[in-house]
Amino acid sequence: MTSAKKKKIATWIIVPLMFFIFLWDIASVVLGNIYTSRVPISPESFDGTHTDRIHFLNTANSDAILLESDGHFALIDSGEGSFNPRRKGKYQGFEQVVIDYIKKVAVDAQGNAHLDFILGTHDHYDHIGCFHAILQDTEILVDKAYFKPYDPAVEKKIDERWGLADVYTQIMDDLQKRNIPCVQQLPDDPFAFGAFTLQFYNTVTPPELYGQGENAASVGVKVTKGERSAFLAADITRTTGLTKLLEDKIGNVDVLKIGHHGYYGSGSFSWLRKLDPEIAVVTNRLGKIYPNEKWMLIIWARLPIFATAENDGVIVSFDDDGSLTLTNHIHGGAQ
Image 1 (cartoon, rainbow, N blue to C red):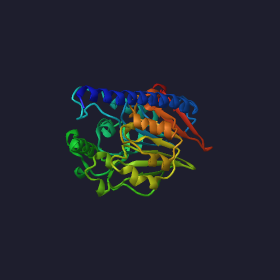
Image 2: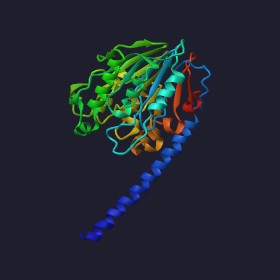
Image 3: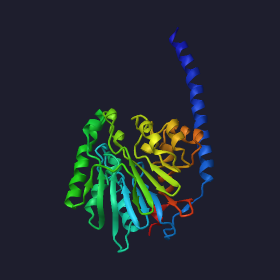
């Protein structure tokens, strides 16, 4: 077969395939807009109407999630800071954004910014990078911290360039200087947090996932109030094998924080079928969700997806009547 004929055959295959992908992507965007339009969302007023809430902060494609229930607050991950070892150029992190939000929202009866606990789900900088700045700020009271011990056996080769051990060690030093106790043997059993019940998953990284990368160490958090629940999936992915290990244990949820920002391998058909969420939140821009993940989430699972970047943050409130209320623009509204 001549070279010209090979090129012609390749063209016949590639062009229709690209056209099909283009149409499929347009279909997912159209359907996604239809699904989200069916779920009411309004600007957050911070008027005290809702007291049991999950605040998904807008820290671009990084995680910073504030839990609030009955006057108690906790921070799950902290957003990406300004000194990510993975970035070669200068980058403006989200330290001040997260600190300002904590001081405006996570305020106790005495008027202090007060976190019952902080949790680092795993040691990637886009999840724990702002903890150093938060712990340096003595105006923010922190009762305790949850961090699994850093384990280099979990890492992939690429993780070695990302300074995981240094970032983890710095946070441990910060906690010690503040005399904040650090719980490294995370509880497996559910525990009360205000009106919420919280449960940690993947509290000990399974040995069979060693070498799969730091995402395999991700701690997921199930948040429950009455018959309603949410699962905060950190960077839990199918590519590490973690979704398969956890999906039968978690059960059905109403809200899913999409794992790994919607990047490749962030979910699976089995994962979505068994968790069966009604609403999804992604800590990213919708356009950055990988196409195959977006098609699975929207076309197959028919999920309305609310992106923290486009919405300038999203709050999901668990109301006493069993309903869920969604609000957005939480940074501009927090006065």
